[in-house]
Length: 368
Image (cartoon, rainbow, N blue to C red):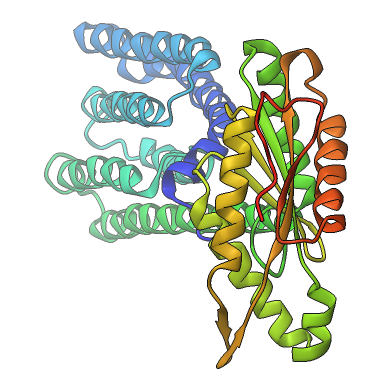
């Protein structure tokens, strides 16, 4: 199943924040160490004060972000904050160029290292990494060719090549990391969906239904809202399979679930429990309303033939209804009562709806 960029970023948000906090420390420590080197190379003066001030701002900004990121839960804000931090770091690099002697090329070695580390260690989306790459590479080329002393043209051209290669290589590394992470997330999502969906019909399986239903039961107990459970069983389905074959039987099951699902509300929980038995959990629904819906579903199935593979096949179903009350919000109990009501419907002639007698709300629930 294809995942959206929002799902991908939300899934990895916690890991990205942890990685960013690591990167902040990774880049802040050299900034502190290089303060002494700057003092040695640049020497006392106005430029050193300006440079030390900007470097201090970057370190303080990094420390503030390191603490703030612990509470951040918005990946869009994270991206823009870290983009701002990256551009602040570039400002330190460019000021470094002007602060050092024009014939000093040694700082470029660290820049190339920092660029590769940035692309590999900083989980900024590739679209925003392009911004950082452009903001680094274009000014750096201009400064290299127009500001620095060209003591050896061959050295300058090699340095230019290495800078461009570092940016391109770093970006491609970042793209590959993102692709691997996306593939891993898609594989994980597919495995989760397979574990929670019925492989034939695509609707929820027993496990997924029970997980969702228990949460709904907790809500019923907390809010005192009604809920109801429907147990659906296709009448004489084994005979249909024997008469038409299992392949057509599978197609009928798919068509059956499609009709039922189309008649339910988006927030109703519909699942296949096994074979030809299905279950529906109806949040916020009293027994009388659940019985009316059950009879409507019964007619949706029984009033129109199913046409699959060029064959018209009649099908009916029996439905059991059980209401859930806040004072007895037990899922297992509700399922047992709905199942008993469904077997009662079969016993009394099939193609009908029976309501568990425990909670009827005054409703008469036998529809033939």
